[in-house]
Amino acid sequence: MILDKEHLRKNLDEVIWNIEQARISVSEHHIVKLVTVAKYTEVENIATLYELGQRAFGENQVQQLRERMAQLEDLPLEWHMIGRLQKNKINNLIDLRPALMQSLDSLDLALEMQKKLEAKEAGMHCLMQVNSAKEETKAGVSPEAAVDTYLKIKETCPNITLKGVMTIGAHTDDAKAIQASFETTHSIFETLEKEGASVCSMGMSGDYELAIKCGSNMVRIGSALFR
Ligand SMILES: *Cc1c(COP(=O)(O)O)cnc(C)c1O
Image 1 (tube, protein in one colour):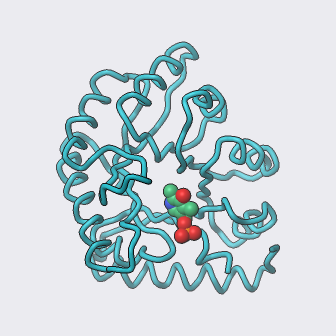
Image 2 (cartoon, helix red, strand yellow):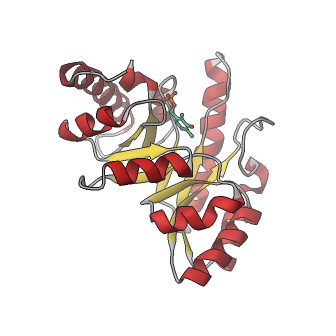
C-alpha cells in the first residue's frame, strides 16, 4: 500500500522517539542508526521516507535490491543487504556495491565472496551474522564459533572489511529469551571491538527497544514504519 507523507511521518516520528528513549536509557553518547527495511513496501514509500530525512534502506534479496537501486538511483540513498545470500548471486551483489552487507553467515560464504571480490578487484563492507538463538531455521555462525570465525574471515579475506555483527532476535514471545539472544550477540561484539568492530546490528519492529537496551547501535525496522 502506498502511504501518504503525513502517515509515514507519524510512523517514523514514533519509531525515532522510541529509539531515542531506549538509547538515552543506555547513555547520552549511545548513538543508534536506523535502517529502514523496505522489503514489504512499495518503492514510493521509500522515496517519501527519503523526503522525511531517512537515508539507509535494507533489502533481503539481491534481485529486489537491484530493482530498487535502479528505480531510485537519483536519490543519494545508502543500501544495505540484510538477507541470505546464495552463492550464485555473489557477483550480482558485488556489482551493486551496497554500503553494507549485513548477512555474511559463514566462513564458507566469506571465502567464496573473497574469491569473487578479488577477481573483480572490489571490496565489500560486511557484518557477520550470528545465530544467537541457535535456531535451525536461521542462518548465521553459532555463538561459540563467532569470535574465531570473525578473526578467520579477517585473516583470510582481505577484500572483505568486517565492521561488526548482526543478529535476529529469538523467534518467541518470551522477552527473556529474546533478551538472552541479544546479550549473547552483544558480548561477542564487545570482544570484537578490540578487533575494530563498530557495528552491532540487532532489533526489528517487535524488539528494537529491547535490542538497544542490550547494546545495539543499528536497528533494522520494516513493518512498524509501514503499517
Ligand atoms: C524483514 C527483516 C527485518 C525487519 O523486520 P520487521 O519486523 O518488519 O521490522 C529486519 N532484519 C531482517 C534480517 C529482516 O529480514
